Each structure stands twice: as structure tokens, then as C-alpha cells.
View (spheres, rainbow, N blue to C red):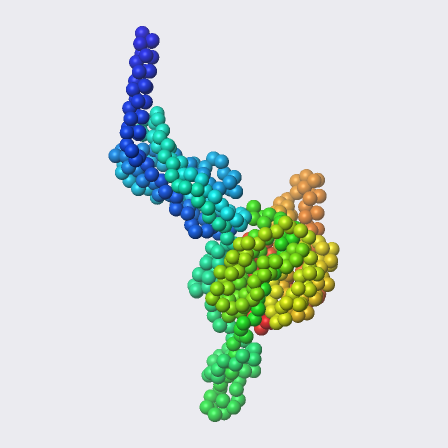
Amino acid sequence: MWFQIVRMLLLLLVALTVLDALILFFAKQGVKGHRILPEKFSNGDQNPIRLKIENFYTFPVYVRIIDEIPEQFQVRNFKIDRKLDASSVTQLQYELRPVERGEYHFGKLNIYATSVFGLVARRFTSGDNAMVPTYPSFMQLRKYDLLAISNNLHQYGIKKIRRIGHTMEFEQIKDYVLGDDLRTINWKATAKKNLLMVNQFQDEKSQPVYSVIDKGRVMKMPFDRLMLLDYAINAALVISNVALKKHDKAGIIAFSKKLENIVVAEKRASQMNLILETLYNVETDFFESDFGRLYADIKRNITQRGLMLLYTNFETLDGLHRQIPYLKGIAKNHLLVVIFFKNTELESIINNPAETVQQAYDKVIAEKFAFEKRLIVNELQKYGIQSILTTPENLTIDTINKYLEIKARGLI
């Protein structure tokens, strides 16, 4: 009796399997997938990948989508499970966050379709091998460009407004309003109109602003899987755009053993494209950086006084003292701002309570290194060199605010 029942169930299973196979394989075109890639990826940001899945079957199917994403992501368990309605088109999306510049190659888009029985799966493949280059974070570039148009930017320090300065670039004579600087009153114009008149000045324009990026070993340290070098490259791209919006000249210098990836500071329509391509092609073996070579080349090749935003990293005072003579030399001819990084891992150790002797020891050492960072800031101030000590995630906004502060104070 049991044998007959098992035999009938087996025959039923075989019949359903054959029926399932016929249903799925009878149609010439069952499910078609199409991957829609962006023209380029933005480094360090979430980039959307869109999938368009078409179901040509006249009945609902269940699909498992396995996309062969680039090897740089090291994702080996990627899959999307969905139910597709009969004769429907479904739009899907997932995101990828690249953490290094370069070329990212996609493979095939594999779709495994099953009917309601789920006994047989039919595979559909589509999408030829595709390559997407990963550029410095142009999403940040767009973000701050859009923020510059909004009305809620006091918290960011970015507004597309003309700041009134006291430089020698005269703009106009206007009526005095409450809040105008009394030192700018034009007494001759006041006497003629019998009304208080003031001189209005505007910021000097077309000052060179160079982003000087250290490509040495100190910039290899990763935070949130992104190296300090790439944080600096992303910030340099944004600050170059802001400088051009403020009518200054933007340029790039990358250096380690020698100066490379140089873009002369200019103010022209194609400058941002040139800077973007140059930053994309920055390569390094993380050698020891030669600040002496940097000082000599800047002194020889950049004669007009400008703003030098130096992205580097100092962990100890001894490391700074080795480079101080060259930094002082650069600061004699240019306004130098040294930008270096807080160690966020040390901050987490300091903020967490110590429960064991080893944790207490680690906390003391972390506090010592954090204090030394603050000593580096004081040491630079002693020589008249401005500095920014920031976390990697706040690098861009802190750099922009420093640039706008310098512009407002008329230091360049």
C-alpha cells in the first residue's frame, strides 16, 4: 500500500516537473533583463544601478537576479528575489559604493525564473561586459553647488553672495544704510548730495587657489574604507569649484618624491573638466614625501601670491619639525593652510570608558596622540601658518569654510 502511494507521488512529481519545464521553456522569450549604468561612478558615494526586468510570460513568475558586479567590491552573495506579474515591466535599483578610483568592469546579468511550482528554473543572461570609470566625488560637487543656491546655507558657510570687502577694488558710491562701516563715508559726495554717502568695495578676484595634495605614505591610512588621499582628492575637487564660483583661479598640485598631476591655476570654462580628469589620474606608490622639492618647485614656478591648501597628515611633532623649514618657506610667498586629520579611531578609544588595565593603558596612549595633534596646530600658529585639524568626513565643509573665512578677511 505504501509503495503504491509513494509511486503515485513520484509519478506526480515527475509529471509536474515536466509540465513546469514545458511552461518555462516553451516560450522563446520569457524574461529579459537590462542593466542601466551611470556614465561614471562617484568615489566614496552611493551610486545607483538600475535594472529593467521584462516578463513576457502570460503568468506570474518568481525570479532570482544575480548581477556579476565588479571584483573591487568583493561581494560574492549578491542576489535580488522578486515576483514578476504576468506580461509586466519591473524597475529595480541597488546601490554600490566604490572606495577607489579606476575602472570597474561588470559581467553578465543572470536571471533565474521559476513558475508557481518552483521545480525547474530557467536562466536568462543579458548585458555584455560593461566598464564604468570611478571619478573623484562629483556628487559632493553637485551637492555643494546646489546648496549654494538655497537659502539655508548659514550652517554650511556657503552662499553665492558678493562679500563687501575693503580692498582697493572700488565698486560704487551708495547711500548710507544702518550697519555700513563709518570709515567708508565719502565726505565729498556727502557734501554734494547733503546725504550720507559711502564708498562700496568688493573682494579682489582672480587670486590663485592651489590644492596641494600629499601623495606620500602618510595619506595611505583608511577611514571608512576610503584612504585619506581620496578624501583629499574629493575635497580638492569641491574647493576648486567653489573658488571658480568666487571668481578666483583654481589649480592642482599632487606630490610625493616630486611634483606631478599639475594643473596651473586658471579661470576658464574648461578648468573644472581639466581638474576632474587630473584628479582621476592621480596615482602613487606612497613613497616618503619630499617637502623640500615641493618648496623649491613652488618658489620657482608660482610667482603670484595665492592660497595654498596643503592636504597632508602629521601624527607627531617630530614629523612636523622635519618639514617646518619648508612650510615656513612656502608661507613667506603664499598664504599657506595646512590641512591634516584627526584619528577617529583614537577618538573612539578616548570616549569609551576603560574597564580593564589594558583599556586604561590604551586610553592614556590615545589621549597622548590626540593632545599631540593639538600641539601641532599651536606649533603651526607660532610660525604664522594657518591650519585645519578635521575628521575625514568633515574635510570638505571645513576646507570650504576656511576658504570663505580667508576671502571675507581679505587675506588674499
